[in-house]
Image: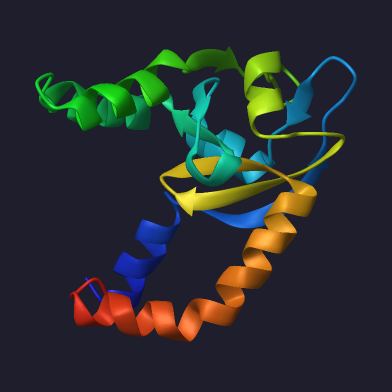
Length: 157
């Protein structure tokens, strides 16, 4: 198979892009239609890093939680991270018009207001407070060259 066909097949199963949405007064957020197609009818919401909410498809969540369960209970760092990610996780159904209900504790933790940004990060989606996302993105854009070089040195790129 030619490289570009493999690339297209790989991209078809990735969550990518940036979408601005609004949370309604009942804490419901419409997920981008492309994400809904990839993620299915049920997702897992969990506290994310950098003050966002991670959203995983059930199959991806099974992989993540499986890896976490393999980590050592004897390590304080493993126990703490498991408690953070698994303890704050909730299952959410995507309703008939593509919305998910965001629990108050996750909404407050991520500082979500009316305007949000939903971004695709390959195997997960992230939900951000719009202002926090724009500030974060501005900082990262200034560092992109240095980050690429650093990741290249450790063989990541």
